Amino acid sequence: MDTRHATNAAPAPAPGLADPVFDAQRLFRAALEALSRPGTIQALPVDLTPPAPLTPWAAALALTLLDLETPVWLDPALEAQAVRDWLRFHAGCPLVATPDEAAFALVGDASALDDLSAFPIGAAEYPDQGATLIVQVAGLRADAGWTLSGPGIKGRTRLAVAGLPAAFPAIWAENAALHPQGVDIFLCAPHALAALPRSVTVRED
Image 1 (cartoon, rainbow, N blue to C red):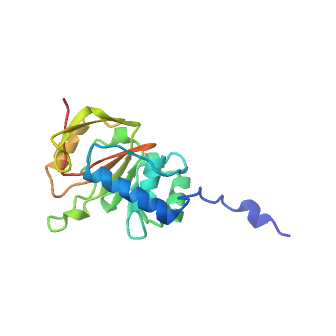
Image 2 (cartoon, rainbow, N blue to C red):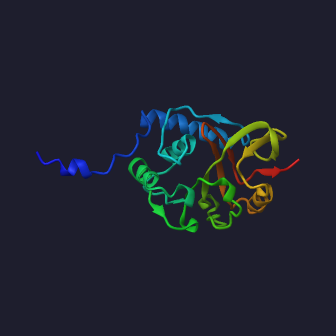
Image 3 (cartoon, rainbow, N blue to C red):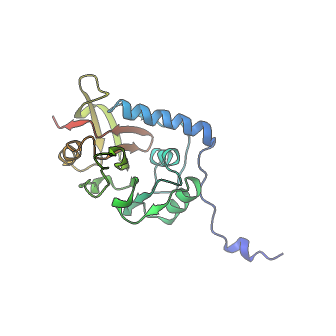
């Protein structure tokens, strides 16, 4: 028996969702809840071990939201071959070279997210074509940190995010001023999720 092909074969990508249909439905509901109620924190409802440095909630969103028709940009922190192979195998998404080509962006280094202008903001006639960013952060905490207001929030709420630049509220204000154009952001701690739709105002106390 010739074992050369087996010996030299590339390792198979890490597993994806255990039940792709049911798990994706649960994840999609959690993502919608995060978007419709900005500042709330959603627990990861599935078990998932993606290739490093991709973290579980970011990976789960990728498997839920990405497909053959969603061009995706990876920031330098996530430019690992194992991550690229895993996304292509499980999501089938095309990977693009620059942020301005992306419908979605996966950002592994949140501290470097000091400018959102490189991402598509959509056209005045089609604001829904603005990019969605899936940003890995170190941690999320409710009832502390920034003050959030806007659609989906009764009065005001608070959210603390570990890992973003200190100037992020000012960076976000520039994005929010573009509404209904602009970008939306999912904030992904390893096992916790929150969202900042472009309609939300973020202020430091």
